[in-house]
Image (cartoon, rainbow, N blue to C red):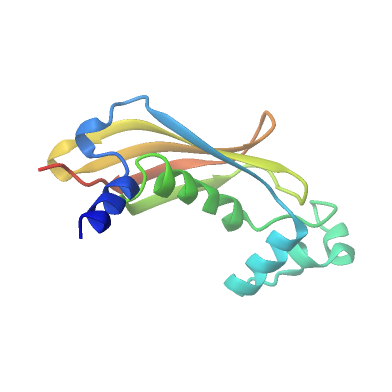
Length: 149
């Protein structure tokens, strides 16, 4: 039984009391064609702008692009695994898609604590995804974070 409790403690993220405004974390991943095809299959979003080069060439993007929500999912990776980490619960997220992401692009998702609301166990975070110096997505997330108490 002690081993189970130890593993649980190792998997826990930050407690509310350990957080401060300005803390940040990041996650980066290079998008592959396989990621795009798998996301289309899992989500059911088979829009040809993601899957059909000939079709996508005739759009404003002039070629295939990754799903915006695939990119947004990297924010979830930061929040759920790094900051605040395991145990936090997503309450809300707003998103503004600013530029396309393509196969071969490396997306870096960053989250920064902007406000802590202790009485509600809530944390507000600025969320941004970039490819190089280009912001491709930005928004704000609200999370519920476990407390020690």
